[in-house]
Amino acid sequence: MNRRLLLMPLVLALALTGCQAGPEPQAQTPAVTAEPTPTPEIVEDRAPDGTASRPYAFGTYARTTPASYWDATITEPQADATEAVIAENADNQVEDGWQYVAGRMTTEMNENITDADEGRPGMPTSVQPVFVGSDGQIYDIWNDDDSTVVLTEDWIGTPTVAMKPGVTSTGRFAIQVPTVAVAGGRFAVQNEVSGDLIYFGELQP
Image (tube, rainbow, N blue to C red):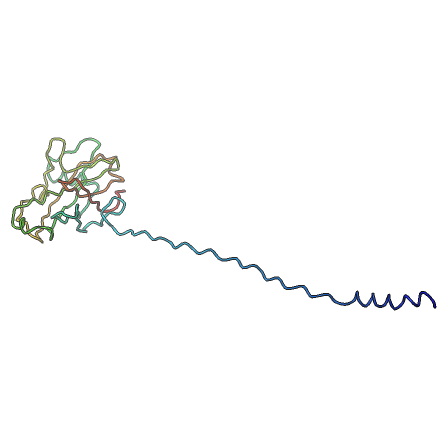
């Protein structure tokens, strides 16, 4: 028999085998990347607390110390009151390179007063208005000669009161400050016993 004819079935078998489709490739599932958990934003409490960075608004009553008998505030602030202070009294002079800042100080006695102290005399001026300059110095109502300016309804002349919750005292003040220290400075109230400060209002422009 012709050898070519004998080989034909084998060739056909091989050809048919090669034409059969192989297994279909498996679909690849894309890898899932977990989204990072966002870090919660921390919102800082910016409520006023009397510190230099979070001062009280003018007119807000606050205590220089938690145990203080006096709630205090400053109103009517003036960063450049020199002309008005000198016009009020000719004896109110100012040093060269200095100027007056001014305002009104008001105190109200609070519920910290003990039964033992209620009715006893108390000095509202145990808390004093001051100005903290941009130079970091604390300027008070006393001049170099230990005198204060002469003002109508002066804070330093506030009379002694019988201590009782709700008793109020008020008076005006003027403080000499170097002109270069006014911008960036701030009004404050200082406890005369502890030295603690509470700040009022924004920085002076």
